Image 1: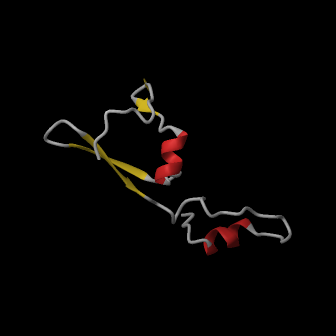
Image 2: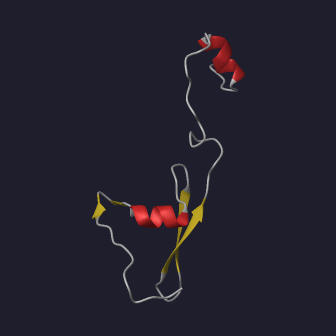
Length: 83
């Protein structure tokens, strides 16, 4: 895909740049996703989006407080080693 028009732009601050919201929505980029940066032989920058939908809080609906919990038991049941 080659274009002379500019879709969006960002400023670099502290070696970081924001991805404009319109681009994030269009490409379905979300928290936990990885961006892989590639410089092509002609100097073109290509970014590959690796979507990470498991192991993040993207699908977490929250705790409604309707059940009593035991942090030690629940923590271990969630597969997190506390030792």
